[in-house]
Structure formats: structure tokens, C-alpha cells
Image (cartoon, rainbow, N blue to C red; front, side):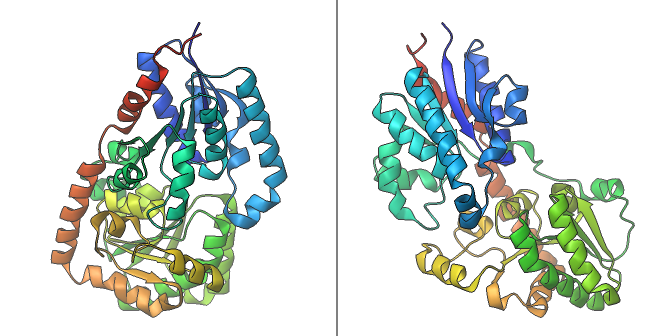
Amino acid sequence: MALRIAMVAGEASSDLLASHLIKALQRHLPDAEFFGIGGPKMQAVGFKALWPAEKLAVHGYVDALKNYRELSGIRSSLLDLLKKDPPAAFIGVDAPDFSLWLEKRLKDRGIPAIHFVSPSIWAWRRGRLKGIARAVSHMLCLFPFEPELYRAAGVPVSYVGHPLADVFPLVPNRAAMRETLQISPGGPVFAFLPGSRQSEVRNLADTYIATAAALHERHPGARFLVPLATRETRLLFEEALRRHAHLDLPIRILFGHAVEAMIAADVVLVASGTASLEAALLKRPMVITYKIGKWSYRLMRRLAYLPWVGLPNVLAGREVVPEVLQDAATPQALADALDGWLADPARVDELTRVFTDMHLQLRQDTAAKAAAAILPYLQGRAR
């Protein structure tokens, strides 16, 4: 009988990552069956979704608490199914709070439990390592500094690189992208990315608009691209623009197209997160910022293990791009930091070299490497 492989993936990025992994495994196991919790990209390559991925797409503690009963019920139901009809292996793709609970119980029953995408233990909550060691048979890491932490804890681990590095070009074509976006020659172009979550946009929209005003005063020909991921975040930013309508700024809102906006830009202002890694892979100079609740910020800083929050700086092991955070993130300070890149082409050239080296280090053919690490756990497990 065919191998049956259970998987869980939550958000859109996990759905994409899991779909690539399924295709890589199918090259070796064309008759394998994949099932569990997943999204449309996984389903497009033959995955059977017992529950849709969006059920797991909660953001923050408040959202998680609101949906706890439903999520707990789904997780328990899936565990019962897997106990009654054990798969050859279980692969949790990100969604650590949901998947690690399942992985521990399945591993205890002799089912290989692989976790794809390490939780950010290197940033904070390093105490989770002992629990992860009990839960997983193998950890697949996206970043080269992560495996050492797991080896020290006795966790079998593989570095597989980051999938974005496989798909992003080493040398993006800014001129072609500006033509595509119909951006005429003129002053500098800024991409402002306030985040994908409503809370991020609420916290940053007014500051971003005031920063644009400060830059426009210095550079009257400047243009500003603001890509927003959802209808809700777009409405929030448009509300903020209406509050500042008297400024009459050349701000162009894009529905999605964050990568395109960053390629076209001279400099990027980005909320900390995956978008900062995207900007690095696109070789764009940037300023990283965010604002969160006062107490959340104090707690995060107290628990943090590293002096940086942005992935470009974490990967470089030093501050290669400015981080202007929390109360320090005034419009004037952000405008100064962004303007600093425009004023120093040699600094931009050096950053491009740093980001190119980073890109090459992360470009590992992630799906193929992940599949190669998983295949030994599947040997002899077909029913």
C-alpha cells in the first residue's frame, strides 16, 4: 500500500512551503498520500485537507484565546484520527504551538515527527528547547545559525536554507519593475511596508505618513509605494491618509505587490518580520521599525537573547541596517535614517555585497534538501 504522510500547515507562507515539499517528496514517492490540515497550494498538488489551513491562521495571544476551543477541538480530532490509522510520518510546517503538541504525542507512539521551520528560539523562549527535543524526531531549519542550538540539545537537525532565496533573483531589475509599475523618472522612490496584520498597520500608519511628509519636504520629487496585504489593512491605512489629507502626499497604495514595490524602491521602510528578509534578498537598503504595546515591548526586550530584532542583522551577526524601534521611531528619526541611505552610495554598495553573500548562503534548494532529510524516516513504513 502507498505511504500515508500527515501534515499540518497554517498560514499562507506555510501552505506554499508545504506545497513545495510535497512536490519534492512526490519525485521520490509518486504514490504517497498526503493529508491533514493545509491550504489551496497544498491541495493543488494532491493534498487532502481534512481542515483548511486558515483555521490555524490566528495572530497574537488575544486571537489565539478567542479561537482556543475550536483549535483545541481540531487538534484533538486530528490526533484521534492519526492514532486510529497511523501515518508513516507526521510533518508540522511552522505553526509550532499547534504542531509540537501533536508531534510529542505521535513521536511517543513511534510515528516519526518532523518539524519544518524552527520556532524563533534564537530570539527568545530558548527554554522551549527541552520540550522541542521531546516532541520532534527531526528539525528542519531555514537559517544557518539554528542547527547548532538543536545539536547542543540533542535534537536531530538539518539546515535546508530559505525557500525565498531559491525564487528571488540575485540581481533584481529595478528599471524594468519601475516600468511595469509605471513609475516615471524623477525623485527617489520609497517603499513603506507597515506590516500584514491590522494591529501593525494601526500602530504604524500615522507614523509612516508623517515620515513620508518629512521626506517629501526634503525631496519634493519623492514617491511613496505602500503595499498592503488585505482589504482590512488597506482600509486602515486609507483612514489614516484621510486624517492627513491636508499633506497632499504622493502616496500610492498597492493591493499586495510588496516584492514589486521593494524592487522598484531606492530605500525601504519595513516593519520587522519576514518582509525585512525579503528586502535583504532583493538587495534593498532599509530601515526596520515597529511599535507595539508598552508592556509587550518591555517583556520582549527582557526575554530577548539578541541585540537585534531584524532578520538581516541577525543573519549578519551585526547591525547592517538601522533598527529604529518603539518610542525612538519618530517621523524625524525614521526620515533621517532613510535619508542616510540616499546620501551614501558607497554604503549602499557595501550592503549589496553583504546581502548577496547572505542570499547565496540561504539558497540551498530548500524543498529538495528537506525531502532528503525526511526520506530516511519513511523507509520500510509503507502499509
